[in-house]
Length: 383
Image (tube, rainbow, N blue to C red; front, side, top):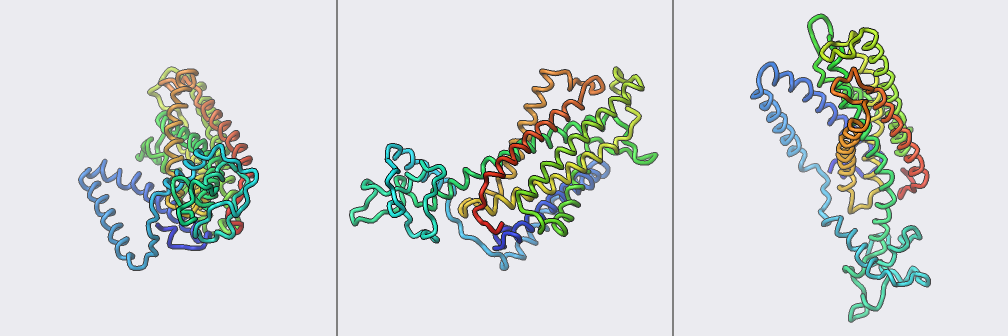
């Protein structure tokens, strides 16, 4: 809905920047201030603050109601996809060899004159091919489960073409999820003092990632965004993520070196004499990568997805993050079962190898991304 308020793709990209910045700042506040209140004052006050925050959010939303540009519902976008797949399967034996543009069904679609069946995924063109079976009594044709428009066919093709690019985000999310879970284990084994009295909770270290992302999104929006194309921005995010993973691997190697030099390998409860603040550097680097990656991907999908699937495009980011986090759990379990890298006592393990493995996944995924980006064609050449 937020992006629908803007017509210019660049303005939509700026909106997604600020949307993600608000999201990360909110997570930062909830992971620090709200948790502190709950731990030190009471859960009742913590929930009360959350209630007040929601109430203010609803109030602000309603105050702007008369200014919103509202897009009318167009029905389920997935019905349009099904309406292409069903007739294309039904007409599998229909030949396309001699078909001309005039043999296809356009209905009264806007820009129909400029929409012709493309050669990619040509078998789907059958769904818009007019035959005698679809002809009405008066000789006309209409949309049905036997015939769809050329525009609907091309919309589905666009969706198929962008899926490889989308899948690269899943593998990126896997590495982020693995890193964010392992950093807590590292922090538990290190000196977390900030000054003589205050000890940073191990579970709060992911906050540094959120902070780095929020600050970086602001910098990208103010000084860098207008200089980058969407694919360049996402690609930079991939590279920075790999750098962060390499930094985590090197840092863990240093931590294990301290473990061995102080003979702490078999003493799981003893803290390694190494400041946990060292973890902030690689986490911040990965946070910077997220500032390039996630807002850039959402803006790209929103711009390139067919009009009926605009709302679906913004949900694709949450979907790939969810899939990535689930797969990271499976990969972590597999590593634990097949190697000695993740024992209960991490001082006896090789967390550095897990980070190196994640970096390799990132490198292979980046190569896959470059291939996908090379063959991807923008629907809007001004992007």
